[in-house]
Each structure stands twice: as C-alpha cells, then as structure tokens.
Image 1 (cartoon, rainbow, N blue to C red):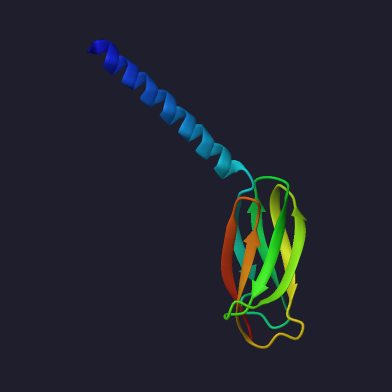
Image 2 (image 1 turned 180 degrees about the vertical axis):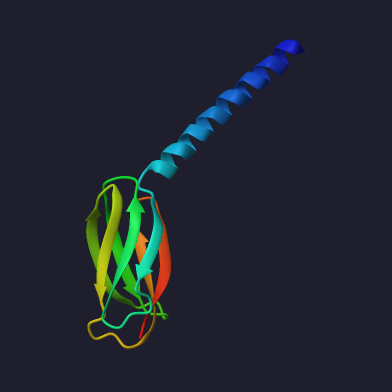
Amino acid sequence: MMKKLLYILLITITLSSFAQEGKKNVQIKHEISSISVYPNPFSDKTNINFNSKTDTSIDFIVQDLLGNRIYSDKFIIVKGRNSIPFYRNKLTSGIYIYTLKTKNKVISKRFVIK
C-alpha cells in the first residue's frame, strides 16, 4: 500500500513540474505588455506603445466596429519598449479596434479618431 502511495505521489509531482515548466515557456515567449495609445482620442496621428520580452515580428491590424479590416502591416519589434505610429489619413471620425498579433498572443484594444 505504501509503495503505491509513493508511486502515485512521484507521478503527480513529476507531471505537475512538467506542466509548470511548459506554462513558463509559453508566457515568456513573444509576450507583449503595457500597451497604451497616446494621444487617444486623436485627430491626425497616434502612437501604439508597448513592451516586448523578445525580438519578434508583429502584425498590426486596424478594423472598424463592423469588423472590416481598414489597415494591416507587419513590424519587426525588439526586446523592450516599442512604438507603432498610426496616421488617420482619410478615415472618418469614430471608434476603431486595433490588434497586435504575435505568434502566440493576440491583443485587441480601441482608439478614437476625433
């Protein structure tokens, strides 16, 4: 009976340590954080600022509230602080959704054009 309990305990500890290691790797790899837009709302130009834990590529997508893609570009970002400028061009005033997409993470937020 004691051998079975020790065996079950050993398997549980081993599996939980492997699961935790896998989670750590996913969280660190390609993670972006501290996202802000300034100014927001804006008239002509704004900057999307964020931190990255690694050098990687990122897709930057802007959509209207109906989900229509109105702008898309790919950027190479570096470890540390990054900034993506966005110009209004001929867009009408309103609320827009921007998305930052890496290989492992997708973050969507909004900005307002005056």
